[in-house]
Length: 162
Image 1 (cartoon, helix red, strand yellow):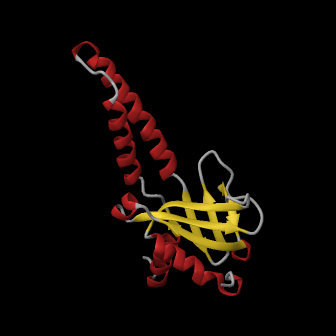
Image 2 (spheres, rainbow, N blue to C red):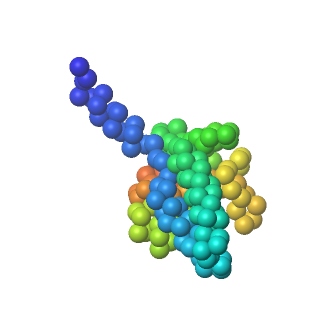
Image 3 (cartoon, rainbow, N blue to C red):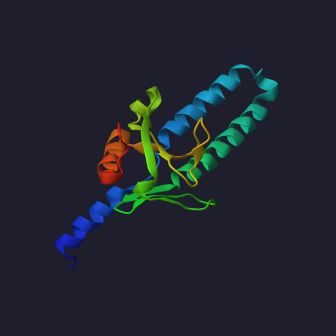
């Protein structure tokens, strides 16, 4: 029998773990394949080749989606950690955060996701900023404004000055 407090802790724990939304990736990939297909001359003689092209394209897209979906972003009182397959884990304490920004395009808004970019003071991120500094990108997270606000609220005394 499970204690009511432990159930709440499990819910809070799952709320801290974020996984990227890959529905948008499928739509973007399909749009790209459709645009590319416009330039192909598909007829009865090469229709089988076109079907092979579609199969390979969607197989590559599926591998990318599985890889993207297997990333886990974890936010807790110690900081932010990113676990991605075949890559080294990244752990960022809150005192290493310099700035936060949010990006949400048209498709991302439609799918309820977006990216939160966390500029770091030092160390290693998933990307580089224009000036060369490290940036941790939480890509295609659900409800990005809430994620950004949660991170901001957890910065406390480490919050960047305005």
